[in-house]
Length: 384
Image 1 (cartoon, rainbow, N blue to C red):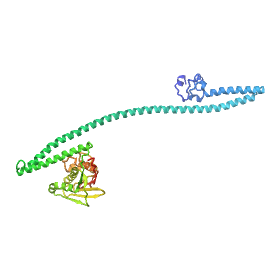
Image 2 (spheres, helix red, strand yellow):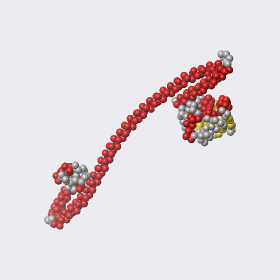
Image 3 (cartoon, rainbow, N blue to C red):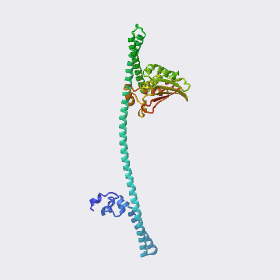
Image 4 (cartoon, one colour):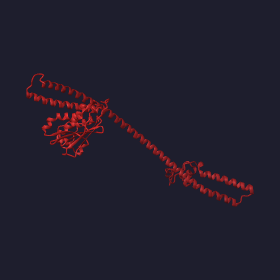
């Protein structure tokens, strides 16, 4: 092995030459095994110091014996040298272990420091990426909020502009039908009644869209009123649907299991919510009819609207009230025309009343039941 090979040896490797030690450097190889773990100068070597101390002690002992006895016997010399050699052997082994242990400790410390540096660099890099991603997400969120606000404002303005001419149309139709401008022929009156019905339907759609905008903007659109009778609301809804129900050959019933108390509610919004559910029951029922059951318990009014219609699949049950402008595939197959907002609005109105709404069905073709739970005093007047 030549000099160039030895120089490339690393500390701790066999054949490493400590360039700080003149002895190892002069020899070109480590004088002892422990030397391959050492980077100290020759003068700092523990074994060198031991040798110097040993020589000094031997000299002192020899002088002391000579002074005391006038002669240094061979036995004393041999004893001293045996002592030095034996002690030196064990000293050599112990220093070798100490130096090797120190080397391993230093090696572990260096590795740990290197790992810490790498980890710190990686953490800084990851932090930078996270910060950049956060800024991108924050910017996107701000842009989305601006777009959403613009959309809501656009919808609100558009719907208000739609409702104004529709309201005017309704006013003129009422005047014409009340013969304010003269008596109308029967045929024309019948046509105008149909136009009035369609206009009322359009006004309900616009009102629904306005309510959706209000819900999406986090507004509470309810106006609380005392002493609202849920039984009368249901009866009025059924009376308004009486013609369609009879034309379809269906029945409707209202049952009360016990006395139903008057409640604190927004009458118009609650009426709209229950109308949506009853409209659906009529729309998706071909034969049989609708039975509405009311009961009161634990400070709440429970309303069950049960039909004998097409039923609801398990897949659709979980998303009936979850989104706007989206209808279940079952409903789309049975009735192609629909806004997909009625049940969503109904659920929001019931929730704002502090209540709950859910649907139950044994499956397609087995009818369905819509369940509404309303607290008797569910609205905070300050929020209304």
